[in-house]
Length: 324
Image (cartoon, rainbow, N blue to C red):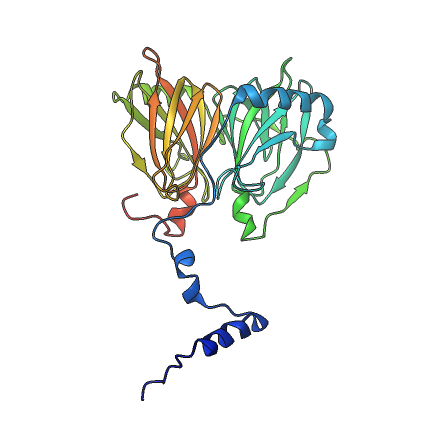
């Protein structure tokens, strides 16, 4: 078969291109760099939310917004380069408050949720299994499980929500269903299947015997917490600067305890570095494929960070670079 003669007239190419939009066609060769970039190209930026700045707004919402009208009283952590529900390209984060005597009514949804308890005490019931909440706990709500939250103490309970909501911008299959009553019938869980308390996590980190230790939250059979969201905790020794790391995953970090800073070099930042200075209860986002380095600025006390990541989702679809 002979070669096809090529037209070299610029007017002919212009005529070709001008006729494509009406047929809902576009030339890939003009957008190849954007479609297949030289490195991962997240939209999200590195950003930090100071707890001391967010807390007054959250407490005010607790006074002005009734639980029954809000269903979930949450301030979303919206990445400055994106719109809700994006805290990173794949992870949604928010700060939720339940006042004393309140119940966040029972519902269920397709989205998977993980919660890190920041302050206060209360309970969450999942599929009829009631679990107490304490600072440092990780509480899970698996897909399509009935759940409600309550607070029987005399002070608000506040936690960090983390869900896979950004993924539903592409797979538009998430929806929720409310229960007929505010509470789904429940009994105390023993053991609490979907609760991961802080104490054994800190013991594992403190016992690792290295300046920078990482603990990966797992299910009892050793798997990630879900198919889309995973979690890890890190301990950075006093005065320690960690090695630079780089992962396909994006991260939503929360400082459980300590003071320090994280140096982030995003893949699309042209070599520019972002320095996020954090302390206890602050939360920050790190885009995928960023070079990350943590620094504990305390000379005497360790720092503990907890991070939500999207590694299970990437691994399940085979989207991680080998070795990372």
